[in-house]
Length: 227
Image (cartoon, rainbow, N blue to C red; front, side, top):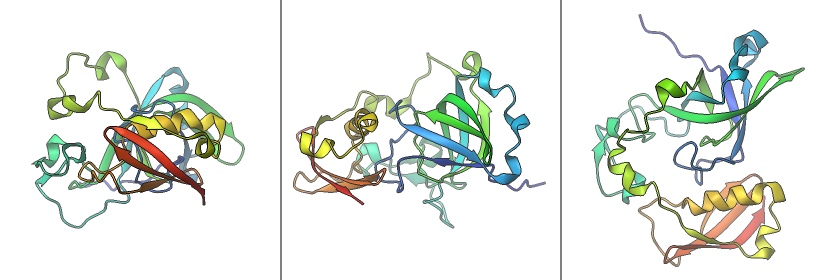
């Protein structure tokens, strides 16, 4: 019997579009999110005991990458978009079932009078309003494998850009979000197949359009526009 998937919650984040979002959860640990349950699941009993866990797993939908067809191979963006690997050897959003898996830190559980239990999390890699299908506790004695090998992805775990963020532009950003945004930028929001030193890139963060260039490993913010 096939089981239909139900959306149990949606997450609120600072990313209204998918461009600029960290490629994996935990890459930017200070990046916050708020998980709001759908009305049917706003029962405090459903999260009873969850406060005892420091991290949780989120199973969610790549809602901006829905396709009717699928390909056996994909081009991981960190490899410049030129090398193909099997879809099941990657975390590409273009999958037979567009499901994502993220491990995030559970900062607190708030009991809201209207929204029921709200989960405050950090280290997110999801777009604003992304649908969540399930939430599970992270069990460190089972889920953590320090000896695990990361395949071709291991070559990029130390990758980072130097960020130049002029004072006149960073002053647009609320103080409590500045370090988070700089960390997002250092992870290089560009698609890896785009490496044009003259091109101005941009993505939305909160209510701002962040515009930047990249040259010789240095990302320079050239404009911040309030939307």
